[in-house]
Length: 606
Ligand code: G6P
Ligand code: 1S3
Picture 1 (cartoon, protein in one colour):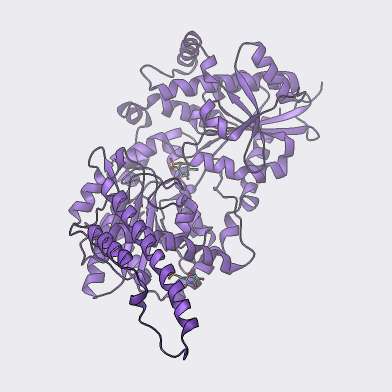
Picture 2 (spheres, rainbow, N blue to C red; picture 1 turned 180 degrees about the horizontal axis):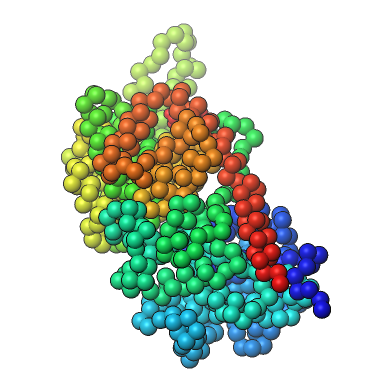
């Protein structure tokens, strides 16, 4: 009998995620940034599977229209003949892999009910009253299951298939693949546990209580029984179960009933400049854009020396305690106090970037910005006029000795216009600490007010709460996120719950120092692989054994020391941070994935 899995057979990897061609959060970054490294190893034998949402796919998907006789092409045709809508083409990202996207609307309500009944009968998985997203993922999971089943039925004699599922949202069909003994080696990666996310946010002293939680009871309590059960079934049934960090691995045993076989750290597709000074130059260029925002935002009320101003930022989804926004604000309040006590003339502007419901950008903020632009245009006109007239005067001056009075070169019109614009711009109000009109007050605004970080002139720490992610279309900065990061001096991410956390890593690869925590996967990883991380501009806050108060003190210390650094030291530190970027390139970190796939194939072999 022909062995189904033999070492000589071709191998084909399917990577399955809800975020393939569909950006929601961090998993999109994992898959997309990893594509070039995957394609380098797997070439045409790498295929990504995701859901089909026409509007989202429009920007990053190109269909294959020619007849395609590969195993994937044939199976897509078979699914279509069975009446399912399946899109097949290329994902238009670096590496251009093949993708199969499943239109979940081709699962009828009757079919969905039947799938849900079977999930109950086979796995006691209750889907009563679940949110619509869960229904969508069940439809997606079923189409993925069917696709892999057909693929393996027809081609497993010649090809070894590995299916790598990311998160429960992609894996509702995984238990059936195992039950039906479909010839595919399976890997399941969880990027967080549902229960961890909820409990860390709501249960004080979460980590201390971790070993004692009853997963089922908590899942029912938080109304996430279905999601948590899918996650658990997937973890238990996959040939290889993995997560993104040791931090999350600790939760897996308790919530999912299985220790991960492997930890697969997250990387990025790192592009480094040939010359070091290039990324330093970019820092200056984008800092200038941030200066413009700061002038527009603050200088109508009062001004400060931009040469002595540092830009700190945090960015992430609005999980107030999980992302450590509470700790960050507390530490900033302490920093403000210390800077004032020490009589420092430095200013720190802290950008709190996240996403919360708002009605519009605050019109006053926009108006102030527009007036500043007008002042700038007026100054440029004056500059041009003065330049031209000075040139004429200098050329026609017989002696060429005295510098004429430049004021005489400015028309009355421009003088008045400048004066009027500046006067109409100035205000006695304090600069707002939030840039948008929020639908309602939230934990951030309440904390800022409680800590009295309301942008008083005497405060050394200013707050700009920007409740929308940064995009180049945003009129306030005119920068994309990556440029914004480059223009800042320090990223601050002392998370309490963070399976990995891309944000500090995104700083590192751009040569910007960053604060992280030992409860984040990234922070934990850096502590394992590097001794002198602090010297390299990665500050790890101890949130594992310290109380909130102690951690806030530690963070305030770190920030205070950073503020006191000389510019020369900051420049050198940026060089040191940037020099470790390669560690996080997928060309180094892909090997963890290779190990997982090899192990799954080995375990799947009869
Ligand atoms: C880069 C540039 C320098 C500039 C410095 C500002 O290193 O190459 O010309 O002086 O950035 O650094 P700072 O930390 O003050 O923004
Ligand atoms: C998760 O996304 P999140 O922000 O919901 O997955 C990311 C990718 O692995 C990870 O970086 C992050 O910590 C997790 O929380």
